[in-house]
Every structure is written in C-alpha cells, then in structure tokens.
Amino acid sequence: MLGAKIGEGRVAEVYEWGPDRDRVVKLYQPGYPLDWIRYEAKVGSAVQAAGVPAPGVFELVEVDERQGLLYERMPGKMLREWMLESPDEWRRFATEMAGLHYSIHHCSAAGLPRQKDRLAGAIKQSEELLKERLNPVLHWLDALPEGDRVCHGDFHPDNILYTGASSVAIDWVDASTGDPLGDVARTSLMFLSPYVPPGTPEGITGTLIQEMKQQLNRVYLDEYYRLAGVDENDCNAWLLPVAAARLRENVPGERPWLLELIDDQLR
Image 1 (cartoon, one colour):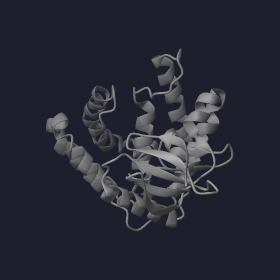
Image 2 (cartoon, one colour):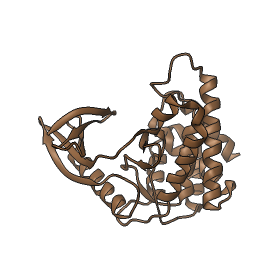
Image 3 (cartoon, rainbow, N blue to C red):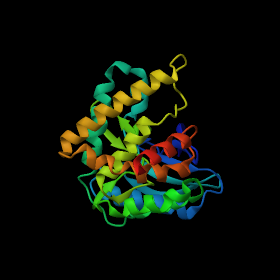
Image 4 (cartoon, rainbow, N blue to C red):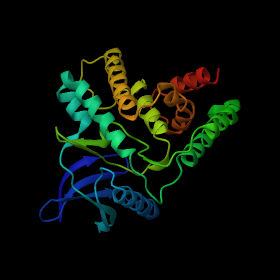
C-alpha cells in the first residue's frame, strides 16, 4: 500500500498510498501524539465539509508502528516550486495566492477553534519575550473584529498545491474561525520576514530574496483587497497580535525583527 515518498516536514513524511496511488499518507514521526493526529483529522474534515478547496481526509492507519493519516491526493506541486522554476511569472503566482485565499474566506465551518483564542494562547506563550508589552497586545487583540470565516492559519506557498490552472491549500492543522484579515496579515508577515527558506538557489542574495518577497507581498495584498473590497488599514490592525503570536515559533532570524515591529505598532 505504501508507495514512494513525495514530501517531508518536521513532524511527518508524505507517501503515495493505495493501488491507484489516488491517496497519500501523512506518516508521523514515532511518538507523535495520537490525540494531535485525531485533531488534525477532525479539523481537515470540517474544512473540507465546508466547501473549502482542500484535500479530503480519510482514516487513520498504522505503518511499521508509526501512525498515519490518509488524505485525498491532489494534483499539482507546491507553489514555491513554481516560483523558483518560473521567477518571471511571480505576479501570476501572487495573484493566484490571493484568489485562493479569498475563496477560502468565503466559507464557514463548525467545530473550528476561535482565531482570537489561538492567537491569545500563542501570545501568552511568549510572555518572557514580550514582558510589559503582553497586556497591551492582548487588549489590542480583544478589540479587533471577531469574524466567522474559515481561516487557514499558515497560508504560504509551501502550503499551496498548484497545477498551473487551479490551486488548493493543504496543512490545515492551524485552521480557525475568525476575521479573514487576521489570516491575510499572517501571510503578509511571512512574506516580509527576513527568514530565507531552505532550498533557495545558491547565488541569490538575501537582499534579492527580500526584494522579491516584498514584491510578491504587494501584489498578493493588492489583489486580495481588490477581491474583498477591504481597506489596507483594517488588515494592518492585525499585524501587532499576529507578530506577537509568531514569536513562539522561533523562526531563525525573526525574533529581533518581530519585536521591533511590535514596538513600532505599540508606539
């Protein structure tokens, strides 16, 4: 049943599955909590049932004493691969991202956690870093709109499969119900981050990467704002809590940048 390996992340590997290879299995590292896998299955099923462009979720399996979760196999490859292979088409890719994100935000789903609860929990985990900033950030978050739309929670080019004509989002474990602009703010923040992802071709300088990411961010935001008919200031209001929540992820090179952004927002 287990086929070729087609992907790998921090907590799991992804393999082809089934006689027709029409499914994939996300095979978790030994010792990964079963409750977390069941939660991922629950969230993925709720999202897919809501009509979101996302893979179907099937049963849990066990392979060589490792737990796995079966998903519908979707066509295409990661959008980041397209960006690296065809850099001249970056505007098309950024526009595709915005359109997919907007279509996700049309949907609502039962059984997902509240966006604000997830953000508040993440912010509190960084209390030692935030220090006296903690309460002002939490008050700011509390004053923002609630929202009732499906939010991906980690929407970026590595979590988008693209065929050249259509796209779907994968990896829904951070999904929530909330304000779409909070979701957009996180994507924008990841574009603007000083972090350089692994797999970046040699010879491309950090400065060039940042310029490319800033251009992608601008086109992505402009297209999303056009589709949704929203104001940029409304999205910017989410940058403070989203940046504070991201501190706990300890992405290489990000924390000083995030803390400076947080201080600017608080001022």
